[in-house]
Length: 305
Image (cartoon, rainbow, N blue to C red; front, side, top):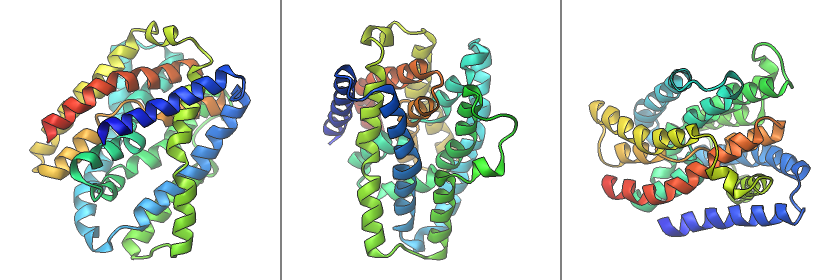
């Protein structure tokens, strides 16, 4: 299951790379596809994953996942800023490096990989735990990228907050705690479109890296190797210690550790591609950490299993 999942992701990357080399997935096409994935597919994934859960688990999930997960995502931006200062990242690159540390590939790799060890029943628990990811990405992260690209100025506005991802996250949470579920027909349509997000995102990343040489990915800034070490080694170790200290064990601890030990999220690269900002750096970060994660993930699963 794990090997199959990783092979699917690599195949999608290869397809995107090939389509770019054939001039089918051009830069303009990539930007439009990124907008489709970020503003349409992903909000539907968020909406369906949270609305289809068992409401009877609400109280426990609120305590164990919303609260703890929320604290993690509140701290991550400050941790990322601190790492950037310590590693002397140039100011113009800091927004991208910051997102490398904040956003792991929890949805497209973390969820299926964790489910391969603990079963599909942990998917909703992970959705609740990583709710902060969705809200933080669709507010702070997108504003950061837009500001860097010069498409927005000043502080984050209410208008920028009210984007499809934020609205979907808050609506899904309200539906969950209100015991409301989508009608079967609506849920099927949302699932049908939302399931496009995973393959499309990896194809887009592959097409993005196709703009540059593969050699450039591995000969990139050495600081990207530090990003990989922190994301794939340090983060899981720290999360394991913290979760154990808080009294979590078994599936709850394991799911949190594995999902937070994933490579950089594809959404980081897609967001940069959408705005035409630091695309090469973002793509290199995603691809490099993804490739380096392939030998690390089986080790992590063995340790947690």
